[in-house]
Length: 111
Length: 115
Image (cartoon, rainbow over all chains, first blue to last red; front, side, top):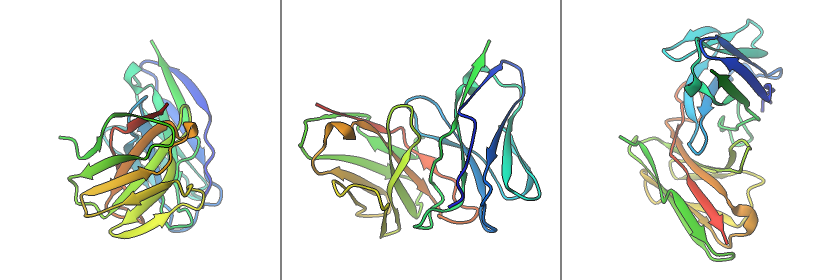
């Protein structure tokens, strides 16, 4: 299982771009990288998934360097409603299931 | 329209009294998961089903059991709840467990209180 390391917390201001980096040094060849967002008292919500280079959707971008040992979630122009915990998930647990959550990054967006 | 529905949203049970939490899905996904999430912690995977195949996490206590009678429904049974089992329980589904089709859809969760 590729362990992930993320900053515990980050602060930002409305309108700024936020980049959250996740380290996954022992990522395997067939591992995908997936990010989820979770608001208090709600289930996590899928944001974006990628394998290499760059992926962009209507919510975020995901940058993955060539060695794939890290990835960066980029949130453009955050608003107060982006205050949440962001989880980076990589790889599989012993049962072959990739949905094992690491510590997550608590993002606080200030006005 | 809600695609993963958990009932109830809030459940209060007595110490040691069996309790069942339910989850249903309208996505026809192969995989259903149960997670336990305590305050300020990440969700912890308890087990998952791929179709009818049950996969238990190594550190999931025997006190937690699960049933999946059909594709749409999955139940979490806590045989003898202790105070330490008070948490948010999250159900999720995904089409697959490997590769691209692993986007998971979560329910709103059931918050369990043990008194």
